[in-house]
Length: 451
Image 1 (cartoon, rainbow, N blue to C red):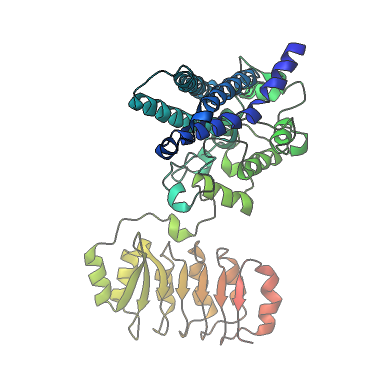
Image 2 (cartoon, rainbow, N blue to C red; image 1 turned 180 degrees about the horizontal axis):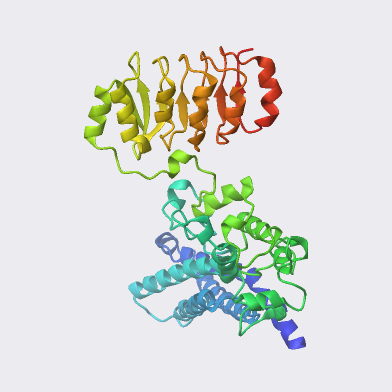
């Protein structure tokens, strides 16, 4: 135990010592510049500086080797840093030897050695920084024009359905594999904790359970990843720590029951997690309006021509959405117009039939428009009972009835269309008192009437 403690003690001197060779090497390279040669002010110091560069890099490498014995570092990240550090010691030594023995070396050879030392110094520093702070340390807060060119870190899920995404397997486990499994696996299980598979995770470690259902404060992993980095129990001890969003994701998974097999559609998604999933995984879990769920081929040009000839003005909802916003321009809805509406029923989602002398039979045709979400019937002499067929419109969200003949009995019909979000009732036989009386029965519907 004493030997291990001494190794850890001296190993931790590495971050302190590593700054010395940086300064000495840069000073040595500076003294080798042409200006110093011409002014003759370098010769008294150059041999000493190169010696200090060599000896400080040697002891830095030695302390680094001791620090690596703690086993916290992943070999794939550690080995390049170690080898380039050893090479830096060697070429620093070569720079000192060339000067100490006064070997008459060609200037080109000296320049090459200086260049190699400079490149190795930069490379070792970068690899060491990445090992300690993570590979994205330099670019983490870089401007957008730099970070936007980097490969997206997380797997994207735009094309996945919610029931096909297993929260632990797709979100939590990849984080554990990236940041924890190097020290908690089948071969190395520090603290008796193995995070490489679900069975081992459920067993926990010597310090407690890895995850406690609905209780993040008692979950060992959550406690360790959310400690201050100054805490000696903070995890992971090296490499990239869990980001705020990653900690938030783990906390949410635990609060939702730490279900290892649960799919995303079984979880309650808060607005914060909704934003997180969209930003980090390209996953839009917001409830989409019906018009975004409908998938249709573009309407043929012949249909567009026929609808225009039947006095319809039209537009598609967007360039990528062929659903139609139709408005009838004639004085009275014709039979031709009704036939075309029925023919192209799946494409009609917004329909304006204001002031076109609608009849009860016309509304029966309108009831066949299965993707209708907005319907304007204003300024028509239609009565409450005429609206009864509309209860088949399961996606209707907006219904405009202003300046019609509907009365307070309309609320019974409106109850049969639960998808409604907004109903316009001004200038009808419906009174304000009737609206106020029936409002509690429509908690998700805005009943609009003139005051």
